[in-house]
Length: 258
Image (cartoon, rainbow, N blue to C red; front, side):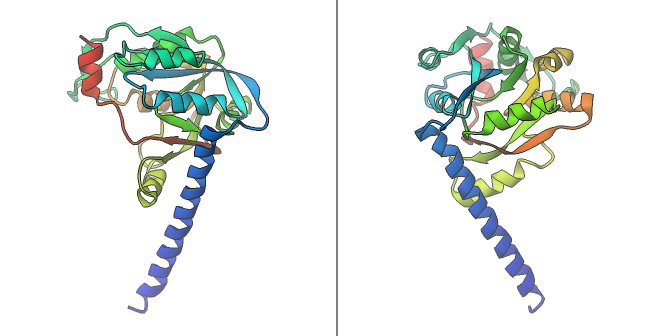
């Protein structure tokens, strides 16, 4: 029992620091929804956001992007024929709105066609269409349920200027209690790449042929870029928050592929 006490004390201290860190990170992220950064400038970045029935969260993403220290020169929302106000919200924020063509059902998982897993071209095709239409040499791929802290876009873009070819921010889940949010915060940097939001050069997007029409296409894309250069960069001051909900792939399959 005496030996366990130092271990328990150390674990309690670690968890306490982790909770406090996560709480501060969430405060930094959500402050981008309530106020603009004191200094702002345009950045030659195209943001590509695939969207399907995103009227509840898309405005949060767009507001945070427009409140940051660096404002993207272009935001492209690729709408998969949503039946709600997704496209109208995007246009009201000055976004370019593209419509993704109907997808088709494919087989395979993470590049392994022998592993049978039905998927659709929907998300991958949306990302590819947006990137092909992008007018800037740097592309930020993200989702429509993501909130950016004020400095996130700036920190990621500076990393690209410094030579990084694949840049990820630090992620915090926003719609879970703080202890669970903390667990997700650290779990994101396990074996699976935190690829829901990533910044790359457009030339590298073209070099790997864009996103594959497979399950977890964003993770596989990140692995392809990292394989070209042998490393990636996680920007510690670049923070995003996301809602721990994902559009079920069945919705993409039924709605996009019909």
